[in-house]
Amino acid sequence: MTDSITLRRPDDWHLHLRDGAMMQGVLPETARHFARAIIMPNLVPPVVTHADARAYHARIMAALPKGMSFDPLMVLYLTEGTDPEDVAAAAASGLVKAVKLYPAGATTNSNSGVRDFDKVRPVLEKMAEIGLPLCVHGEVTDPNIDIFDREAVFIDTVLDPLRRAIPGLRVVMEHITTSQGVDYARAGGDDLAATITTHHLIINRNHILSGGIKPHYYCLPVAKRETHRLALRAAATSGDARFFLGTDSAPHVDAAKEQACGCAGCFTATNTMPLLAHVFEEDGALGQLEAFTSRNGPAFYRLPVNEATMTLTKGAPAEWPDKILTEAGPVTVFDPGFPVHWHVAD
Ligand SMILES: NC(=O)N[C@@H](CC(=O)O)C(=O)O
Ligand SMILES: [Zn+2]
Ligand SMILES: [Zn+2]
Image (cartoon, rainbow, N blue to C red; front, side, top):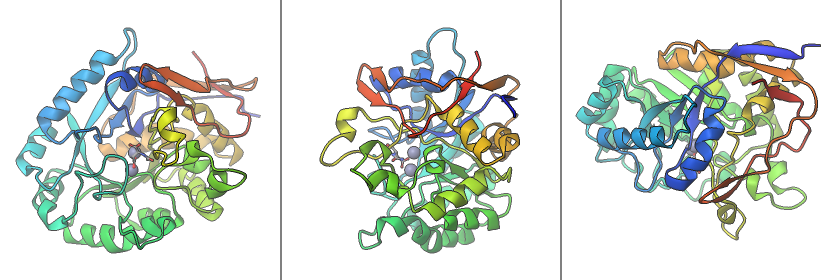
């Protein structure tokens, strides 16, 4: 029985750090384990321009506790007013590693997102030219489409036509939750990849809705039925270079989650690595964990693998705080609902 595994230090290719007091509280949770993270730009107001990204990067570095190292990889929020030249300059400077597409209304703070794809065509063409990845929240926003079908419908009606219209555009399908997402990513070339979250490898929709409603399991895209979770597990543990970790750790204070109209987002920054070791071991795939957390992401983003390593060991039941107490309020840490025995060694 394997009870220790050493990997290159992991990165998180989809993370919400927020801003201000919330960021101050949650940043150490990520920086403790992850060398780098793709920082989602859905602040209010969003991170739209090169200058916005520079300012946000400075705020993140200022919030980082002394003695911790962390490299935030900045992302611009695509709006219908985004200037292709500003995007190109932000990429050329090395600060910005991707642009994020939120269909307007699809998720938290997506109101500044895209309604008319013709308006963003010049930006997307520029990105294809310079090889800058587009990270996509892949759900349609049509209220007539069932929420459990919104990812699959997005792939057919938006993503596939978009990729055909802009050949060479490099795309990351963010937080895929369906077998259709897995199949589509697998069918792509080296210009297509997909991130998978920790929680979507662990919960299906029953966990949210059966035996009482669990607001801390509610996120977008919403977890689907068990067959989809199993497809995600197979993809993540396969070693296939197109799949890599994006936790989508998305902190909301408890008061915003535990109410009549609760926010979407699971907070997994604290315990992702122990949870993933558990999941990969369960599937007999511990040997593929490093590909998923530490190798496939840098390869797609054309960045070097981290030099440092992380060791995970198996032992007594792992413990982590139920909540992270930020100055903005308490944030509940994702509870997998089963004991975990993997620990990140100091
Ligand atoms: N995933 C979520 O449920 N929420 C994210 C937004 C997102 O990634 O879609 C958030 O910003 O809270
Ligand atoms: Zn999203
Ligand atoms: Zn997200």
